[in-house]
Amino acid sequence: MILARQNELGHPRLGFVISKKNVRRAVKRSHIRRIIRESFRLRQHQLPNVDIIILARKGLDTLDNRQMHALIERSWSRLERKASNAQKDN
Picture 1: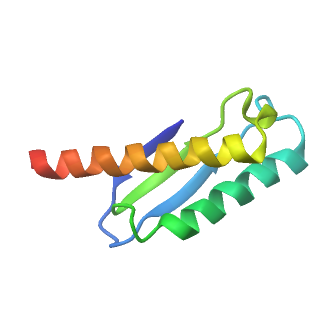
Picture 2 (picture 1 turned 45 degrees about the vertical axis):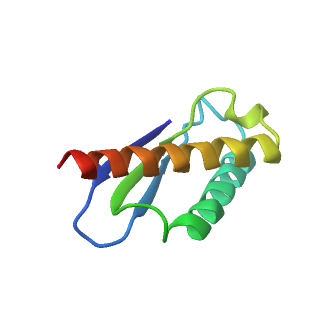
């Protein structure tokens, strides 16, 4: 799940909430963060100026790398679409 709020900084920022309750192993939590951070690094110039919070849900640790990358890419695309629609409305 992704939460986003407009910021005035001129660039997007990223934060994580990955609880031990949802992803038990610290190694897996770190792995998830690394994958998302790398995806963010590659896409940050295309993303709107927002503060982004990634909330990890149960079952995220059961996805393989390919599924996780696909999920993240869909999330970034959805965020870009919603931000562009919000700008059109203003």
